[in-house]
Amino acid sequence: MTLFRPYPFLLICLGFCGLMFFIETRNGAFLLNDFKVYYEASKAFINNGQPYGQAFGLSSGFFKYSPATLLVFAPYTVFSFETARVLHFILIATMAFFVFKGCLELSQKYAPALTRPRDVVFLSLLLLFSIVHLTRELHMGNMNLALILLSLLALKAVLAEKTLSAAALLALLFLVKPYFAILLLPLLAARKWRLLLFIAAGMVLISMLPVLLVGFETNMELHRAWIETMKSHNTGMFSEHTFSSIVSSYSGIRLAAVWQYVFIGAAGLIYGAFRFKYLAGRSVYTVHTFISDAFVLTALIPNLVITDSQHFLFSIPLIGLILKHLAEKPGYWKIAVFGILFFFYGANSNDLLGNPLSNLFDTYSTIGVANLGMVAFFFFLQHKSALFRIG
Image (cartoon, rainbow, N blue to C red; front, side, top):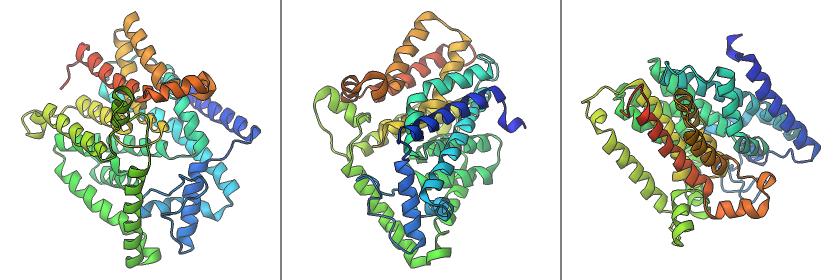
C-alpha cells in the first residue's frame, strides 16, 4: 500500500515508538496524563457532568478544548482507562508517521526541483530533530501530532482546490485549538474568500454537534465554560519560551499575560505589511509562498501563546523546508548554524543534559530563541536559493 510508504521509515518510526512504549511500561512511567484529562472529561460529559473547571489528575489537568472535541474522545470511554491509553498511544505513533510523511509531500510541492535528501533520509532526519519533543508528546499522550496532521491535510486540500474538505479540516482545527486561526493569514493572502466562508459555516455546524446529545441550552453552557477555561488558562500559566518570557529572561521585565495578544497582533501586522501585494490582489500568491508562510506561522505559535514545550513540534514542517534548502547547496557554516540551532531547539531534556543545565536553558528561554532562529535561518536560505526569492 502506497499509504504506508516508504516502508523502511515506517519501520524506523514505529520501532522508535515501540521502544518508547517498552521503556515507559518497564519503568512504570506509562501514564499519559494529558490523555487522562481528555478521557475523564469525556466521561463526565457522557454522564451529564461538567467537563470544564475541574482538574482531572494533575493540578493543571483542566480540559481546555471545545465541547465538540469531547465527541472525538467519547469512544475511548467504552474501554477502561488502562486499555484506552494503549489505544491512544498506538494512534499517536501512527499519526507521527503520517505527520512526517505529510511534511515530505508538502516539501516536495514547495520545491519540486529539490530532490535531495532522499525520502527515507529526509524522514529519518525529521524524526531525529523532533525526538525530544516527540518523546514528551508520547509520554503525556497529548494531541499536538493530531493538530499538525489536520493542518497538513488541510493545506494539501487547499492546494488541490478541495474546498469542502479543506473547510471541514480547518474548521475542526480552529475549534480544537483557536490559535491555529493564524493560518487564516495565508488564506487571506491567497484570497480564498469562498473557503473562508465555508470555514465559518463549518465551525458553526461542528459547534452544534453536542446539541444532539445534551440539547441547545447545555451546549451553550458548555461553550461559556470553555471560554472561561481558556481565559483562566492564559492568565494562570507561564511558559518559558514565548516572546513574553524571552523579554523577561533577557531584560528582567515580567510582562503581563495580556502581552501575548500584543505579540499576536504585531505578528499579524508584520505579515500584512510583507504580504500586502497579495492581500491587495496585485500579485499571484505562489504555491511555495503559501506553503512557507503556513509553515512559518505554525512554527511561531508556541512563541506567541502560553503553552508547553512539546508544542514546538509545530516547527517540524518548517525544519523539513530547511533540510531541503540545506541539501540544495550545503556548506559547512550553514550546517554548523543549523546544528547550533537544533541543539538549543531539540536537545533540552533532563535525561540528556541533566537537571541543572536543562533548567538553565529554560531560564534563558533557549527553545523559544532557537525556534525564532530557525525561522530567520529559513528566510535566509530561501532568499539565497537559486530557485526563487521570498515572494
